[in-house]
Amino acid sequence: MSEENITSTLSTKVQEIAKSPKYRGAIFQIEADEKGLALVDVKEASLKVYLMIDPDCDKILETRFFTYGGPIFTALADTFCKQIQQKTIDEACAITAVSIEESLRDIPDVRAIPESAPEIAQMQTLIKRIAEVYPEKKGTAILIREKMERIRYRTQSAEGRAEADAEWNALTKVQKIEKIEEWLHQTVRGTLQGDGGDLQILDLTEDNRLKIRYQGACAGCGSAMGGTLFYIEDELKNNVYYNIIVEPEDPLDNLPPNPDLPGLDDNNPPASMY
Image (cartoon, rainbow, N blue to C red; front, top):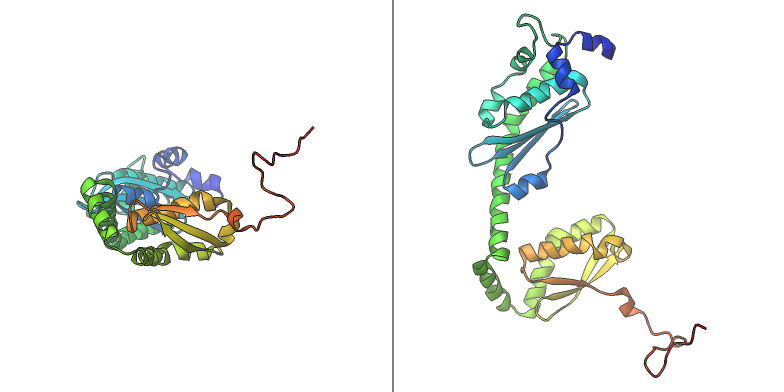
């Protein structure tokens, strides 16, 4: 059936919502983690729904959806997202695809969507999957929240920083480097190696200045002094010691002096350009 013929079988409500959905979009995991919330993102056929949920009370705080599936999926998903605002997961998953279709009818006895449309059954499957995956997502969100709270305490509070300083100062230089190396191995190094790069610890000076050497693809990567450096330093600040400063080796440091290009000083001025 052509798109024009399909549209002609849909209610006016379905067509209007499909033209101007209010909840189309996406929610990313980093947003949920920063807020200490759980993110449920489930997909069925060409429809994906995102729910941001408070794990303390199981209440849905934000919803979004995305689909390439045309007007039926768009209307079903947009209506579902609207109906579950501020509801608990149990209340949301008690909603059925059949009840959503009924709410989209112009006339109570005239279907909004053809009975043969597969989207009705697919929508019901998606709702079922939300209930199935939420317990695991909730548990993960609680663990991440606890981790974020520990990081904030150790890096942003006076008491936490004092504790971190005492623990750090009690370690020898070798122990500090071992602790840094262990965390780099657990989190950072795998990411770098996945892109063909790596790093080497050269030294730890002034108790908190970590000198590193980029290797492989990282040595010539433009982001090595930007995003990659920020990522490495941020991981170490949050998980090893809040006052660590990471300093990449200057690649020019290892270049041998060129006897044909003597250093310039006040007694050896550059040749005149004129």
